[in-house]
Image 1 (cartoon, rainbow, N blue to C red):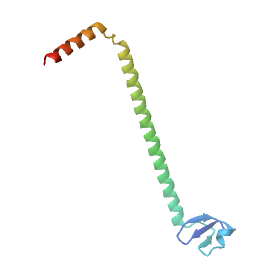
Image 2: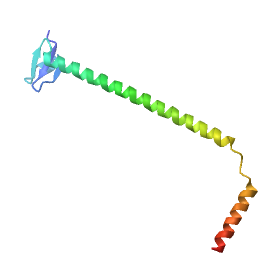
Image 3: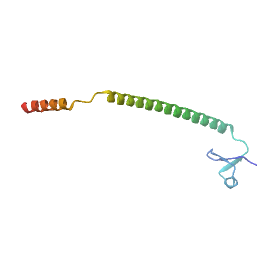
Image 4: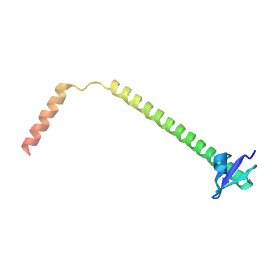
Length: 103
């Protein structure tokens, strides 16, 4: 039994009696060498894309972990900073207001 059908534009399909009835398809038992080479190239490109995607995700993970570490460091630094003296802040604001009124 035939294995493949090749459409007149070169597209290859698995054998189907329904498609084989069409004049657009040629019935073959083996894939043409050019098509097999094309499949190998497509698989190679797919492997390259998968590798690039994996590397991109790894880089994103590294960037995310660095951002997370920086955020934790900043939160700890902020928590360690002593609270602002409200009376000193109020006095500074009063002086600033008084200065702006003079000018």
